[in-house]
Image 1: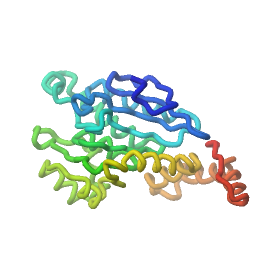
Image 2 (image 1 turned 60 degrees about the horizontal axis):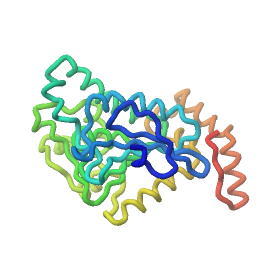
Image 3 (image 1 turned 60 degrees about the vertical axis):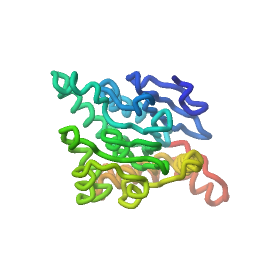
Image 4 (image 1 turned 90 degrees about the horizontal axis):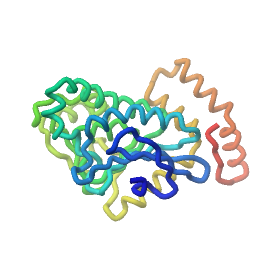
Length: 273
């Protein structure tokens, strides 16, 4: 399955059969990749997959000089079409039902809390838990034929609280209520207009747009990006952690390299230190 990863990518243990993970070497750093791999069922995620996401985020966070973490569905027809409903009768109605709930909540929290910038590359269906995963990422690039929705009301389920609040942060409370109350699917234009996605690209331009966005992000200093992400996600500007991150950037070798590169009118070679 490692052949599904981008070129020059080293596969790592994802902890689940339906998840493929790897690290891709670039000029002076690393890009992390997570692929949701069950294309014949639109990449729905089973209990094992949900349980594997939080530990996998920790594994990526420990990788030195990692620039970006990209999430993507295999097959081109879906990012993730939610949880595996074939497990609902067996799992949700049994003793593992609580485990399923806890695992989805932990997955959303782990992605949102990941110190590395995260990007959801969305092609096709992004439904239910899949939308929760995408919403937990920092950025969302969607192909023009993608569809978004939360059908929890049609299943008699309540959408996880953390994913609900994350949705509201992106689109506003009123729009979040509309999306959940109607259980209707949104097209890309609607998702772009209400803030659910960050960027959109045509079917033909999706791969070049993704490549360009990854290159733009990964060209910047990792410590700077991680500090900025922390500050944006934690608005307590006078916190000790905020001050430490700002000071660490000022004392970093990358800051010195950035200054030299600017003076020399050349591209900086950041090393994440």
